[in-house]
Structure formats: structure tokens, C-alpha cells
Image 1 (tube, rainbow, N blue to C red):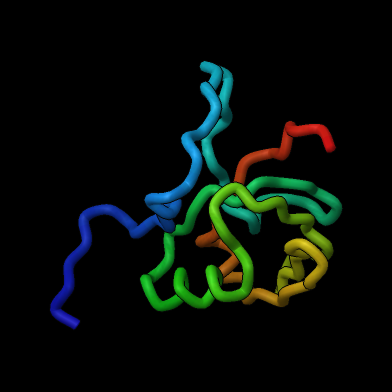
Image 2: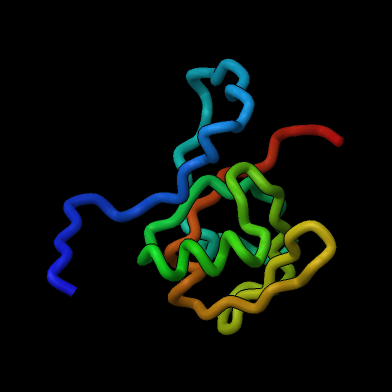
Length: 105
């Protein structure tokens, strides 16, 4: 209430996180989870959601750089995070930003 954000909030990595490895110029820009097809394997990069939704997603296991597998696109959107499947509304899936997972193993 009364809060005006210029930029959408993003989940930030914890201050104690290990520094990221050097990035390459070809690192893709994050895209909404909702724009992908079932079977896509991606890495979580952040959100364009309100702080309360970010806190809930973090509690459900969506942490910076975690791997997600899109099990079902649409409404609801179902993702697998580690060994758990989570159902998300289409609106929330629109606000989850991901990049293709290019890491092996």
C-alpha cells in the first residue's frame, strides 16, 4: 500500500552465496516460464512478482539458479523443482523468469 516501484522486484541470491562463475557474452536473457513448452528444462533466475509471492516461491524451493522442469504448460502450470511438483497459476508462471539449462549433469 502506498508503495511505488519503478522496477519489478527480483529474488536476489543470498549474500553468502558463492560467486557465480564467469558469464559468457552469449548468456541468454531471462524469459517467462509461461512461454515454454512442457518438457523444457530451465534455471530459475528471478521474478517479476510482488514480494509476498517471491517469499512463497522461495519457501516452495524456487531459489536462485535451481533447475526446473516444466511438466505441464498452461493453467495450471506444473513444474518440478528437485523432487517436488508444484502447480502455479498462469499469472504466477508469467512472472517467473528462467533461462535454458545448459549445464550437464
